[in-house]
Length: 420
Ligand code: UD1
Image 1: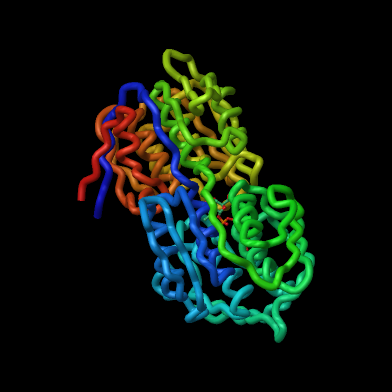
Image 2 (image 1 turned 45 degrees about the vertical axis):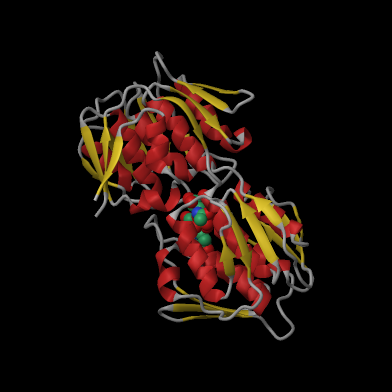
């Protein structure tokens, strides 16, 4: 099994360019199923999850070309099957976002139960609640979830989400784009990835209003056509590099960021004493020669503090003086990195969904596990701050979601190597 060896780092410096967002590109790729025409997507990151989504679409009947790196031309003239390859679907939870567009376009979908990071139970009841409200008949067996639209297609409806789920909002939006009549999603997720998806569907001829707010209106149309779209920058990757600057007390210029998407991370880093400024070329993060202090974090749906930055931020908080509290409200099982950080010498105590970080400890290199994608990034960050060498295993999690991870870190001075 491949591992990363991370050496203690002097302050990182230089510049790094952020890739297209993993969490945006996966639903964007799925949305191309809504049309028989070709869609062109730019700034597609080269990631294991993108490769899986590509194969899932191909198993459905899409023809996909990559004329140059980071550009995908996707065309699905015919839906050859409404049951994408089981093994691929089982590899990634995000594969479930093909259900909405399949149901919308083909009137049917059958999916193997999705897999992915083990952060909490991660049910799909809200996705199914949405499909049902649109008139679909849902059948659940031990291995499969099937949805079938009524004769004449899905019908617009009003759906209240009990929690503003990102995936459910995306799936319902895609299914409703081709439904008869108008759909309203209330208490919708407001994440930038939702707005990006609505923008693509609207370029394809869709009629979606209110994406980015908690109330989305989708007027169904009879058909959608091809379009071109550039994926938004990955705010989680950007946040990870902001924290890389902070944890090594370095200074970085981060290019291709949307500062509005990073408001909570910026605010919390500033509270700790890190300087974050926007310039003409991108975002400057300066943490050199500073006395940094603790802060408190509570993860929330957007525009609150992102759960995906919780573990990288916690790694940083172990290195600053004072006590910090970190409250996780989005996922119920997202503290698996705490044991790993403690193994490195951190002092973190868990009380329910709250972690108390007693900062200012010297971390030491250890053997740790990337327990999920973002926790893996947290381990690497902690390794940069720790004395000696940190060995991070199960790095396939990291490679699922960060493009050119090692290359980007090396280009700013980190000593990270991959060993098989
Ligand atoms: C997406 C992101 C993930 C991020 C998460 C929250 C992708 C590919 N992944 O995941 O990186 O951490 O948003 O910002 O975009 N829930 C239900 N029922 C459902 C669906 C969700 O109870 O039907 C719960 C989940 O268990 C979780 C919470 O809602 O506790 C948030 O999940 P959701 O927003 O759906 O996350 P994902 O779309 O899976």
